[in-house]
Length: 332
Ligand code: HEM
Ligand SMILES: *[C@@H]1O[C@H](CO)[C@@H](O)[C@H](O)[C@H]1NC(C)=O
Ligand SMILES: *[C@@H]1O[C@H](CO)[C@@H](O)[C@H](O)[C@H]1NC(C)=O
Image (cartoon, rainbow, N blue to C red):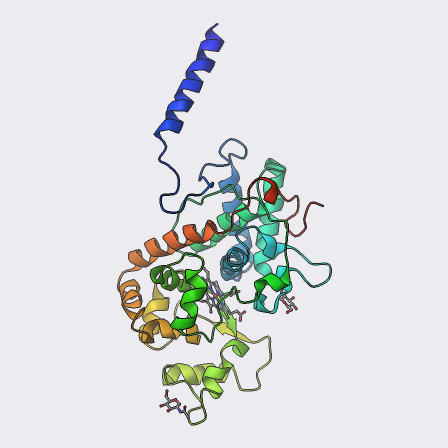
């Protein structure tokens, strides 16, 4: 009798909690919830935090690699971990030319976290959710903002290299070309500028910006929107015949810290790609750059809001997805 009463009051309390929850989403309703694994995998966030910390200690490349991977996954057919699928015939998403040499340490991070999570909660947590938790961790563990990650995505069932075409921005793009790539995914100009701040960490291969150093136009070999000292430094690191494997820091000032230096760099003509520097030279985005350069908290708040938006793209539920046993392969 006593037991039954307690059970009943638990149900009543649970109903009250549900009733008190705000309608999820607001402008963009989402099936995702920050407490999705609260009962099915209560230690999930601690496991992810510890594994990511261990991996960062081995190599700081973990930070940018894990962050960039989530952007590429979500922009191509949604946040469904299909970018992780190892192909049999070189025709999966990760084989697309536009994978733009996603660094192997991002894949390794997710695989390791998945292995650790499976020991505690087998078959419960999707690779897509692990990617987002790991991305939050690398940002937070490099002194960036912390946020509660929305969870409950399933892993996608289709990964095709051909789906990547045209979905990702190109480093040679100007604001007029960048805008539609982001806008068709529901991002605002502020979101676009905030997300670009991810280039405060990580590396870029010389071949991705060589045109700015040597082939700008027929009268001017070097893009005048690069500071002359920075251009010289980049030319030293990247001679015109540079090998395909040579890379430089994207943020020349604080390369392994997630901060707002990316924006102050733009004010000093220290943006690495055309797609970075144009955010400052274009009048439509310049005020946003100035704001983020002056106010790191404004950048962090905008970055978090945009990452949550990114995480809602193309979420798979029901029959459109599965919980993969291994992140690099479909279950069947
Ligand atoms: C605005 C349009 C964007 C363009 C044109 C762009 C382009 C690129 C390119 C070409 C690279 C260099 C890759 C290489 O040479 O290995 C790169 C690196 C990177 N991107 Fe972006 N990106 C954009 C937005 C983003 C966003 C929204 C994020 C994440 C939220 C992101 C995160 C990164 C990171 C962290 C790296 C460093 C990767 C590493 O060190 O392994 N990028 N990006
Ligand atoms: C990206 O695609 C190229 C082929 O275009 C491939 O050689 C490379 O291994 C891929 N990178 C990753 C990390 O899968
Ligand atoms: C090359 O670029 C500079 C600076 O943007 C410009 O003044 C010049 O007219 C350009 N030359 C040609 C041939 O387009």
